[in-house]
Image (cartoon, rainbow over all chains, first blue to last red; front, side, top):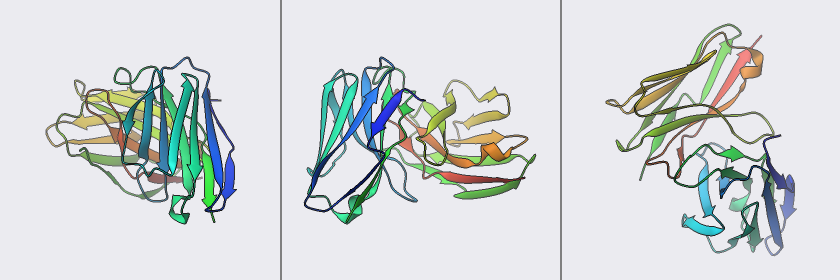
Length: 114
Length: 111
């Protein structure tokens, strides 16, 4: 148990669906991250939140919409996705952003877009 | 921005052998270099890290070396065991900001 829980673990959706990924951290951290992991590619940072404020948005298409209602929860809302969006989506947290960069990852949500 | 290259992409060793994974980075301002291990069905987990004011760090069977002049760093695993089989990622960051990851190395340790 890493202290970072992601649900669901697997998700299959059509291109016209709307779904949400959830991440919860039980570590008392102030920063949370969304990453996309595709086969044979480096981990791609999507969004960073620090103290519930978005501090980084790395040119991610608008069909991905993050939400951070409090420092323990992070969501990724998905709508009108494309098949190339199929990947493992990882959530991570760290004590602070820009201070201590040890990141703790969840197990990920395996997303398949049909 | 920062670019991290990692080699090899796959590494197969016999149990008890040593394994070495190498990474190079492009931005000389990078000062933090962690290594993560990802087992099947799990997220990456930090196994060791090194900061730019240190040339080598060791933790039991795992060691990391850093050559700032050449801008490369390496992970060394001695006396490999089957449970070391996983994907290993190197990463680099500047000023403790966001990490740039390598593409990963799949390590296979055969009994």
